[in-house]
Image 1: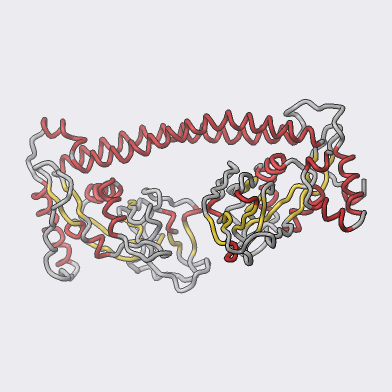
Image 2: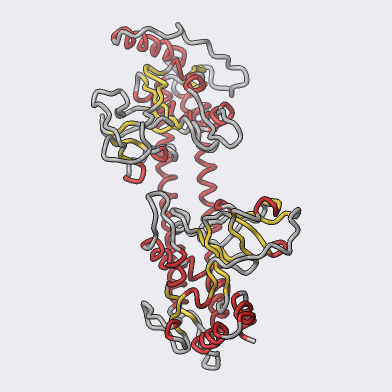
Amino acid sequence: MAKQDEVDGPWPLPDGWSWTRIDRIAAVNPSTNFETLDLASEIPFVPMAAVAEESGKIDLSARRPLRDVAKGYVRFMEGDVIFAKITPCMENGKVAPVVGLPGGYAAGSTEFHVFRPVAVDQKYLWYWLVNRGFRGQAQRNMSGSAGQLRVPADWLRDAPFPLAPLAEQTRIADRVNALFAEIAEGEAALAEARKGLDIFYRALLKAAVTGELTKDWRAANPASETGSDLLARIADKRITDGAAKGRSRRGGDPKPLDAVGLPEIPKTWTWATLETLVVSGPTNGYSPKKSADGSGTLALKLTATTKGCIDLSARAIKALSETIAAESDLFLKPGDLLFQRGNTIEYVGIAAVYDGPSNKYVYPDLMIRVRTAFPILTEWIWRAANSPIGRKYMSANATGTAGTMPKISGEILRNFPVPLPPIAEATEILRRVTDALAASDDALTALDAEAADAARLKQSILKAAFEGRLVPQDATDEPASALLVRLVADRSEDPAKRGRAKSARPKDLAS
């Protein structure tokens, strides 16, 4: 074997195996010739979103005319493996074997590296590239600016690769396939359980904000105050607070709510617009003068409220380039209610209650803040906004043109219809919701633990596979060293044969 084909690996390999460089067993970013294809024809187009994380699945449903993708995109073909090179897609495992291509060719995002097997089984190569150990090495060798880090092609070419005999590669890939299929059945059951919890969550909030959840409680506890009485108390509070702060009511009294088409609610409840329930807001957040992070004031990222509850972990906070004056009203206080002003249609309008420290964080321009007169009212509006009733209103009223982010305005939020129960019943509803969601959270934690166990089991299987411990060795298999010697010979012969070797498949080399 040529000296440059020998590399030191991080662990000893079984007899018949060899550590080599990836570019010795697969072409990295090879050329793919589209010249034989009709420019008017359509071929599969694979954007980054079409590649699932860690599962190896590719959505091949998108099509584009060949003339539109003949230049400026990555090309690949049946039998290749595509590998996301940019953060965070690479870390998330957007790596996949290319199988089932109609016509055998495709184009895709320029953020993919392409591997074309030469002396390696396609699935065996994919399992090596997708395993978390290899992706961890790739992450440590990324280059570029923050948010635009990429895995260099040169690093991939030189990266060590545990080459098993071809026959054993196939046995390993088949065994991993079988074991992963068993795990997938369990993961599918976990996904169904998660879906059930999500359905339960939506059904719970719908029952809460329509009064169905406390139907029994109302029968046993006649109301001493109605929702209309509470609304009047809130109006008095708004007037008092406004006078104390020297504010006038902009636009006069809020417009009456037209309840036509809204769900039926108990007789002791009333419908109210959000505008009639708040004492401050809706108010947009801070729009930074510079986009780069710095060492200034801490601000929430949009992801801090995406899940409908506040996330104050480091991943949801950034430091602005500017320092905001300490007396600014942009600083959050406990009990502030935040809405996502702009996001995908799935998340626009999602609400979360801020429960962090006062005057530490500002909120971004893609959020809207409101403040209410009573803590329980804040929690009630939060639950109503995230209920099916609230989600339907937000998504139906979000505006935006094709290709732009859906957004809601302060006016849309002011007119959000909120079902308002008597304060005593609201207290009981929120207690029941909290108890039910606590049990749901416990179930979700258990599901997360099982999913983590499944992920760890997969990595253990891959570790055993590439250490030669997953399937028995066969002394009659041609050793990997012999295969590498033949590849060296192919590279040293005439250009025509070298060209054939570059695009060969393992079956060609085994013959």
